[in-house]
Amino acid sequence: MLLALSKSLGSEEGFADVKATLTSPLAKFIAWGLLSALLYHLVAGVRHLIMDTGVGETLEGGKLGSKIIIAISVVLIILAGVWIW
Image 1 (cartoon, rainbow, N blue to C red):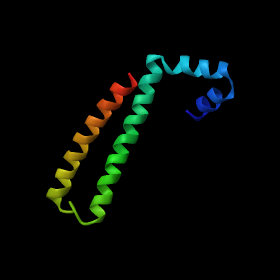
Image 2: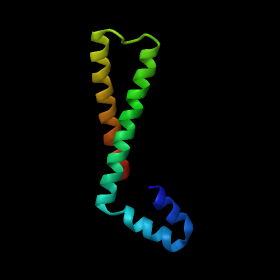
Image 3: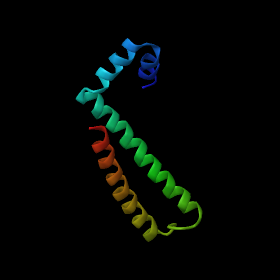
């Protein structure tokens, strides 16, 4: 992605090449996969920050927190897919 950014900022032809490449279904799928991993990581990180305050540290709280994280992540991943596609 950094190489694509560098190429797109280099010239108008480079920008057109990157734009054509990123509109392919395979590139969209790869971008969606990377974004999905980052979204899950972000949501799980927020959960850990909340756990640092003492909320959800019990076994039951941990199980409930995991289910909530999965649900929120699925919604965000679907929204990311709609945004990319």
